[in-house]
Every structure is written in C-alpha cells, then in structure tokens.
Image 1 (cartoon, chains in turn blue, orange):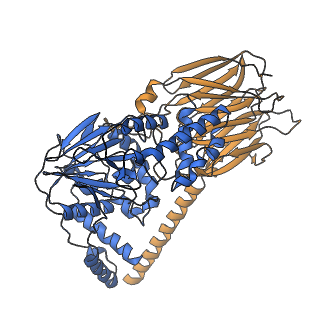
Image 2: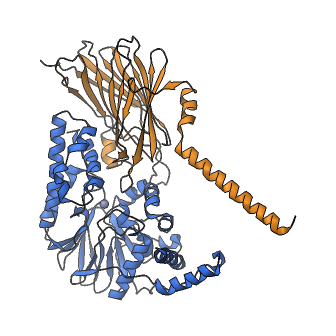
Image 3: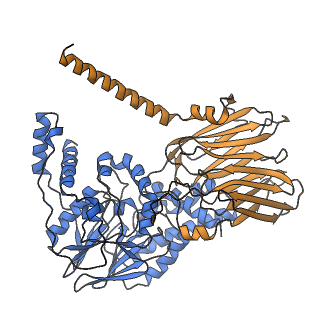
Length: 355
Length: 272
Ligand SMILES: [Zn+2]
C-alpha cells in the first residue's frame, strides 16, 4: 500500500517534469509521415522539496525515486512486429490504474504505430517504456479505436508535435461531448491524482472511411465503421500478418457493452467476419484469438439480447421488467455480467422498441 | 500576543473554516430537497402516503441517460378527488424539475412510466397534487452508474433527421374485463441539455427539448407534460387511462425552438 502510494507520487512528479505544454503538443500534423528518432524521456526524479512536510517524507521520496522507474507493461509479440498487452478483465480502479483494455503497437521499418493508450497516463508511461525497450524506431502514429476512457485516457503520454493522433472522423465530437462527464465519472474510481494527469485526446488525422498507413515495409489498414459499439469505432489491420486490433467491436470473456446500436453492431460484425484476418487483439479478453471464431460468443450474446427484448416487447413488457430478464441465459458465459448486462438491455430496448 | 500564538490561532481558524466549508457543501449536495420544497412548492405541507403515491426507480441507474421510473398515484377508493398534477424532481440534477404532468379530471391515469437523466447519486421525488390542492410525496434514491455510460448522443446526425417522429402503442387490458387501458407514446427528440459543447465552435450547443406535450382522447385531456432537460432523449410515456369512448388519440408537442409536432391515431378496440 505504502509503496504503491509513493510510486504514484513519484510517477506524478516524473510526468510533470516531462509533459510538454499542451499548446505546442497540439500542433497540426498534416498526415502520416515518418519522424526523426525521439529522445528517450528523461527519467530523473526531482521532487518539489518545498512542499515536503518532514524529513521522513523526504527520505521516503528519495527511496521511491530509486525504486519507481516506470515499469514496462507485460507485452506479447503475437505476430512478428505486432505487440499486444492484455488488460485486466475488471472495472477501472485506482489499484489497476485503468489498465483494463487491450492495447499495443506495431513496428515497421521506419516507425511505430501505437493502438490505444490505456486507462491512465501512468499506464501509458509504462507502455512507452515497453516500446522503448522493444525498438528504437520513433512513434509516428497513435491510433485511438474509440472514445471510451479505458482506451484513450493515456493519450497525454504520447503528445508530441511529430506524433499524429488518428481516429474515426466522429471521434473528436464524441469525446468533446462526453469528456467532462468521463472525468467526473472516473474521479471517484481512479482517484484525484490519476485524473489530474489526464488531458483530452484530440484526433489530428481523422479517418472518414479507410486509411492506409505505411510504417516502412508494412502497411496497416484502418477502417472507420458506422454506429456499432459506439459511433466512432475504428479497426486496425496489419496487412503483413493479418492481425487486426478490433477495439471494442469485439469482446471476449468480458461482457460486451453497448454504447451505440445493437442492430448496427451485429451488421458490422457480419462484415468484419469476411475480412482477411488471421487473429485479433479484441478490446477486452484474450489476445491473439483466431478469426472469426473469436467473435462468435459476442455475436451470440447480442442475438440473444435482440431475441429476448423482441419477445418482451411482443408481450407488452416495460423497460423495467425487461431489464430483469433479458440476456439472463448468457450470465454464465461472461465475466462482469452484472456490471453490463442490464445497461445493455436498457440501451437495446430503447432502440428496438421503435421497430 | 506572540507571533507563535497568533499563528496557532490562525491555523485553528483556518481549520474551522475549512471544516465549515466541507460541512456546507456536503449538506448542499446530500440534501437539495428542502430547498426544492421551498422553491417549487412554496413550503406547502406534503405527506408521504404510499397508498396514494408510490415511485419505482432502479437503485442503480444502469444507463444514466435512460433511467426508467414508474409512478402509481390515485386517491383512496371512494374519494371524489382526482390526481390533478404530478411533479417529478431529480434532486441533484442541474435542472431538478424533470417534468410536471397535468391530468384531465376523468383521465384516470393511475400508473405512469417515463425515463429521466440522472447526473449523479440523487434522490428522485414524485409529488402528486390532488384536485383539492393537497400534496403527497414519494421518494427513491438512485445511484448513477459510473463506467463508460454517458449522455445520450449516439448518432447526432440521425437524431436530428428524425426529430418529431412519433409512435403510439396501445396495449390490450392486462386483466381482461378491466375498464383501464394502457398506451405508450414515444417521440423522437434529442432533448439537448445545453451542457454539451460544439466541437467546431467551442460554444455550448443551446438547449433544445420538448417543453410541452399534450395527449387527448377525442377532445378530453388525458395528460399534459411540461418538461425539461432531465427527460431522456426520445421522450417516452407509458400510462394507464380510462377510455371515454372517443375514436382518436391526438398528440401535440412543442419544443423550445417553437416547433410543433402533431400525431393522431385511431383508438383500437379493447378486443374481446
Ligand atoms: Zn468501449
């Protein structure tokens, strides 16, 4: 506990030392391009001594400085040059620092593309550390698969004028509409410190439909989808290995969450199933699962919800009644089912009752 | 007075005022209700009597943008008064009065369901005013869900294209011979809260919501809703009523941009 607290404290001072002013970091980037090698982030520990209340605390801080270098994130090379970290299948907490979504990076001959930045700047610093210990190629692109906090809250760690932030053409508007809500909703969950470090992610390279990015001897194909998990879902397919980062268009193990349209999502899954993909990094759940088998459980769950809700509507059931029953047969197949199923039923009911 | 004592007193004072400030914000946040009773009901006496009004709401709001609530309200059997008005308040919302429902004298609306937005942990109150002016109150605590639920705005372009589209569902009587019927009115409307930011101009999107909606059977008023931003996107009302023999339902809604939306549906026979 104490160690963790100190570690957080140290991490914060470290980030404050290295963060660039936001204005310069938001400089316009015209498009994908390779960039010159980045300098590694300085990893000195300089505490603001004026704030320290006692010698004991100063000693503790000094100790923590030597212990708490940013720790690399567990990472798997699921195909040559394609690296993924599997997040915890649990809600965001201070303890896991928002590390619940799968995130990763793809290394080309010229540069690196990061896919999603995780649920806190602290987690993203660890990802950065992992990247730096894996390759000396510069980061040219940070790709955000959609608006949810567990996928974008780490973005501040990658803010640099020479890094393009890539996302769905609707992502900026979606984040804009929700960001203050996300901050307030996560403050009691992540704690004041982790929330204070955040800054709002902003797409500099929007994708309206499709975009190919050349990382040097390696093309990655981005595709922006219509309303599904959210209204700003984006997938990243590595043409070299057939690995696709699906964002939250695919959940395995972790109960799917609907923040868009259940009908739209099922339609998108049908189309994704036909893509030339070998294996996927889903938004949540086991990384490297074979395609399209990896999405069959989710497809089944969403179809069960549609069937149960349509049956309830036919029987003139109310929303409050339907929330108690729909989808229950799927409870044993998923983790965090009680955290998400009723909300999914609510969202899907409000959509399907118009049919 | 020595410097040290002065400093200590200053510290104590500072501690005291900090404590006071904390206590004050906690009370304000935890109990907005007494202030609402003053502002909305001019401190009129109200009674909690579950036989006259009761409120159902989920303890945990699964989707903070769509929180279903249900109200049962009727005078005691044999009482000649009727329920003239029900006010729904989401205490801790920026605009606490979610809606006021007024009922026709013979509408017989004894069960009413709608959906509200909940910004944070809050009490929800439903206050019924009987035709003689007496007030009855019911209360429920609701926990807004954290996680990644957010203000509804699922597809802004599509929402704007469908504004004003209405759907009326009529349900067969639940218990065969009952004189009560049940219907549900749904209206497409984004119900912009005025708290969302426009990404291009960095100005707030102005509030835009349905502020009045009336449902008549023939010429008789069933219910009239005066609403605000705390009613969910695509306002949704499900209610029981006593049929008056009229052959049509007529609905008129106006929003804060003075746009009027109308709908008319034949009353379905109650079946056999
Ligand atoms: Zn998501």
